[in-house]
Picture 1 (cartoon, rainbow, N blue to C red):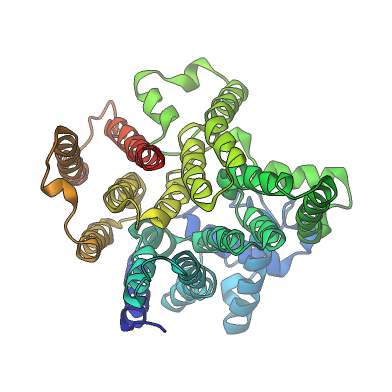
Picture 2 (cartoon, rainbow, N blue to C red):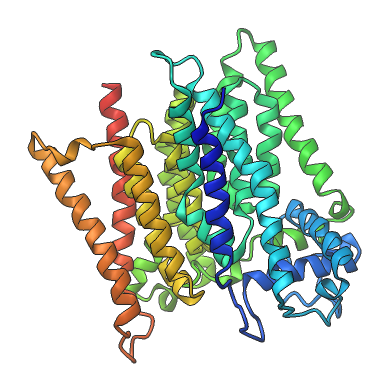
Length: 482
């Protein structure tokens, strides 16, 4: 039985998304390259006008230097579908060459609608099913309203709304598929989970942030079967499901080694550098003090980041392999995605979404930490949002989320500290929130020095804040196990 809060909350989530979509988007009226909005439109143009095997190949009709496709094939097929609808509604929107930089009121409505359609179809349903499966059979029995409230809060993540409906992307697809993967694992459908996660990987390569925990979890499930024959059957079944999914999606490109490498080169562009723009990860924070790009080549930095990432992933991967429970998997997903965000190669500000989505799946266990993390992760997007003129929805969505969240979870224990630990957490939380507010206002009102136009020294503030929240989550988990 669905609670009325569920219906109201869904309408509210859709309304906030659509209102955010009325604001500007990435690269609006900014020729010659525009931004991510134009990139998504251009992919529709390319996919509906060229043969499938030409989508990732440089040519006179497909200049890869102008927003060439750099996402896996499932994104390209999605662009093709959207492009066909656009072509039916108005051929000028996707006309080869002449539609570059096309902007109009009705086209903006169309583009925003394509995001909302897949959001409702994939992400909304994934969130509802997650909380339904997770809370089923809990003792004491969970009220329908509690489930509805958790669903609604998951849908109100300000970072996701700002990026998908403000900046403009389709992160709701890959993130929804990842949550669907978790839903399948919770229900014991391991082969289906492998297929769904393969779809996520083939929609957005950043889904690799979750690959380590899911791989080790499934491998451990295989080894936990009663005898070696069943272990082998389970392992082969899951492996074949993944292979067949990839083969089907990559079918137009596996006719030659050259074609496969061309696609891989587009998906993993190592020539772009170790980070993009002002991402609040380890490498950018370090570069404020030491200009690492001046001392190391991209190849050297790629090797350094790979080694750092793999080493940092080992403890949580071992934990989920040793004890493959859903709780361990969720903690490991948070650790893995954050490690990739902090240490991997070619990280963008938007990648923090991969972490914040998983964090919200633990809000019932760690309400304060999850609220804290979501606010900080949204704050870390600030340089991108300033560039896109999205600071009004930024402030509005964060304040609204905090109000809804605190109203739902009531009074946090830290407001009535009874020991030094709780006092420390209270002071740190308040200081962190005040710091976010002051730095947000400062970024809008205080111009950067001319000789250091991109100083953004507060990245040094964001990165440890982000890391601290996950450390608190991990510590809470350990205390609970003890």
